[in-house]
Image 1: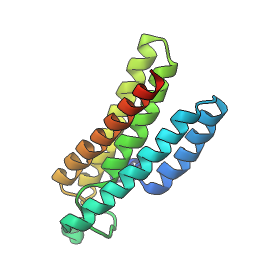
Image 2: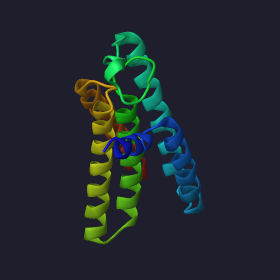
Image 3: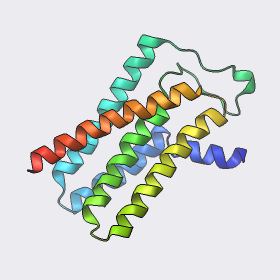
Image 4: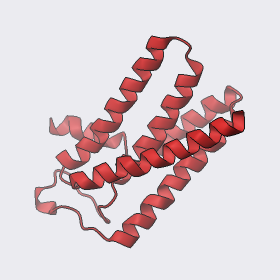
Length: 158
């Protein structure tokens, strides 16, 4: 179980999100979805800035490192993995949802995204590097940013 949680937590690392983000930018650009490419970039940068500002303002210490299964530094609140995974995977899910016309493809993409984001957040608590409240707050903050950018994108399209 420990190895699985470490693998899952890596899906929320900034390195993974940047790598997959580059792939997403290229795919969106090739699909001539320039507006979506820009919105994804701005949403990710906004999430990173907001998350870091909150960490600096709140200064919440991480759980006791003695019990952690991996090593992490920096402040705990909010969980950056939770914030950024909601924004990144949520935007990708939204773009997939827009492209897919089949109801079941849309439902499956939504379920996969929700399960993935949940598991990334859960892995942070399981590994002992975040409190559950850090993850819940990260999901809420990431969700608010995601909804804001999706609404803005929809308004520009119309």
